[in-house]
Image (cartoon, rainbow, N blue to C red):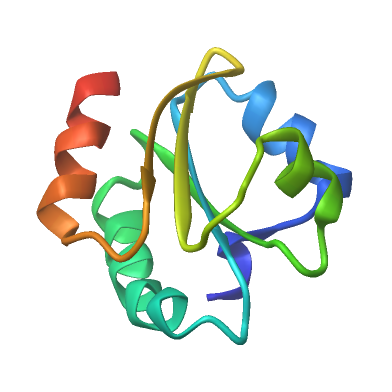
Amino acid sequence: MEKLNITDSNFDEKVLKSSLPVMVDFWASWCGPCKMLGPVIEELAGEYEGRVNIYKLNVDENPENSTKYRIRGIPAIKIFKDGQVVDELVGLVPKEEIEEKLKKVL
């Protein structure tokens, strides 16, 4: 889903300055678990629309924020509130686990 993709150039505006909580999925095209998580991220984006902004950041194409947030393994999910990381998940995790984290920031 193209509208979910963000880049280093619009990261601050979309994530750090957002009035809503934000979830960012750090991923790469060569990452098998990332591809498996993709449909889940898209489902969540639809289900939480208007309550949580959900984005995907390709770590290969956007090294600045991948480095800034110390992404060592992917997929990696970071949840932001008021411009700060408040929670994170690393690896292929079930949708329910992601939803538990999202509900905490609502």
